[in-house]
Image 1 (cartoon, rainbow, N blue to C red):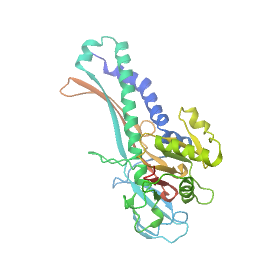
Image 2 (image 1 turned 180 degrees about the horizontal axis):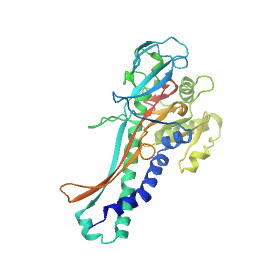
Image 3 (image 1 turned 135 degrees about the vertical axis):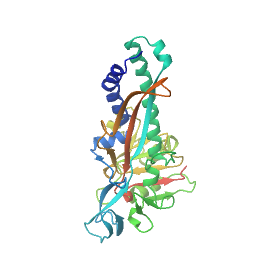
Length: 319
C-alpha cells in the first residue's frame, strides 16, 4: 500500500513548483505579463464577481452599473469598475489499484508520477492557451475571457466585463474585416495606427503560421530586408520578427485569417489570491471511485482582464 503522505509531500515539493513554472513560462502571453508585473491577486466579492477599476479619462465610459450603483461618468478622471468571474481549469493525476500492486517502491512511484505530471501539465497548458485565443463554451464553471472576446467591436460580443459596447463606444476594439482579400502593408499599418494613442502602441502581434510567413515577405518587399527578431522571445525558442517595433509570432491557436495586435500594458492576469502560487492550487492525493483510485489535482483559477479594449485591434478574414 502506497504511503500517501510521503507521495503528497514529494509531489508538493518536487513537481508542483515545476508545474507552476511551466504554465507561466510556456504560455508566451502569461510569461510576458508576469515580466511586466501585470498580475492582479484578488478574491470574488459576495456576488461572485471580481471588480477592477477603469479610468474614464483615458478610456471613456459614460455610465455603468457597478457595485456603487449606476454612475454617470463624465469624460474626466473618474473611476468606474469592470467586473468578471474567475475561470477554473485543472488537471488530475491518478494512482490506481494496479499501481499499488506494480509500483512497490517509493522511487518507482515518484518516477511514474513525474511522467504523468508532465503529461498532465502539458495538457493543461494546451487547454488554457487555446482558450485564451478562442472563446470556448464550457459545461461547468466560467469561461476564460478570450482575446477573441476582448478584442471585439461589438459584432460578436455586445458586452465585456459587464460593460455594454453598444452604449459605450470606447469599450470597442477596432476590427478590420479583409473579406478574403490578401493582406497588405497598408492594412497592417492602418490597424496598428488604430491601436496607437500617443506613445501607447501594440507590444506584440499574434497570427497564424501562414500569415506570419506572408507578413514577413511583405516587410521584405517593402524595405528590402528581413526584419530583426526580438531577442527575449527568440531566447524562449520562439521564432519571431519585429513589426512596428513589436514581436510578431505565430501561434497554432490563432483562428484562420487573423492578425491580432495587443498592447500588453493594458492586459492583466487576475489570479486567485489565496491559491498556493500564482493562482494555482495543489489538492493532495485522496481516495476516489469506491476506494480503487487515488488522484491529486492541480487547479488554475484566474482570468484574462483588459481595462482598455480600444488599445487592442485585429484583422480578420485575411489571406
